[in-house]
Length: 243
Image 1: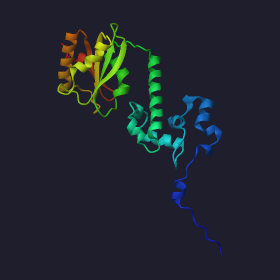
Image 2: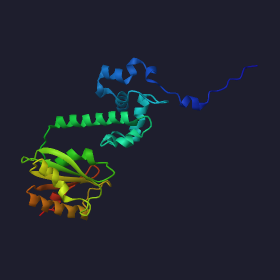
Image 3: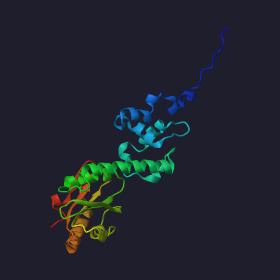
Image 4: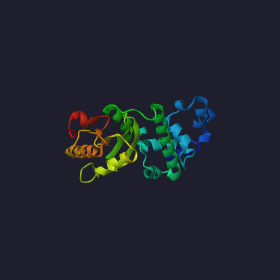
């Protein structure tokens, strides 16, 4: 009589983990980077190199893949919430700090490539500079771009988080950094988490207050930009809030 063979449970197969040491040297992310260059690696592979080690049941590569899913793609790495990232299983404070540092370095390199002090001459220039920071945010953020006499960028300051209305935001806060940094002009921008950049009545009312304050301080508000999902609106171009 033939001896019965007990099949291995499917669950045992599903929980099999491929460790980095199980991969051939040419398939390991770090070795592939040395051989081919960082640009040839996938995003999970780059994350695996940053994370260095995985967790029980997951290799660093698998952990990188899961982090990418949980952050909903590369867009999730913009303005990383350190506490939220650290709370992801297998990350913790140390790895969250490594990821945040890598993202900040990338943004600084990109800024250096564009030029340390880009000139802002249109609403589209503002959108290109600020969309990576604001598009996709779940809360409203108010940013102030400080400009010199040639409209070259001095600094971008995040001055407020929350609904933009005259009763909540202090107009003086918008100009405090401008005065401190001897800015000649400012441009204000904020996002609409809904993705629709259509200015609200509150946006128009606050714009009027900002423009009036700028005239008193001799620091003109050149524009107020509302950023939505892949779209923007210039209140100056629409002729609302400016006189």
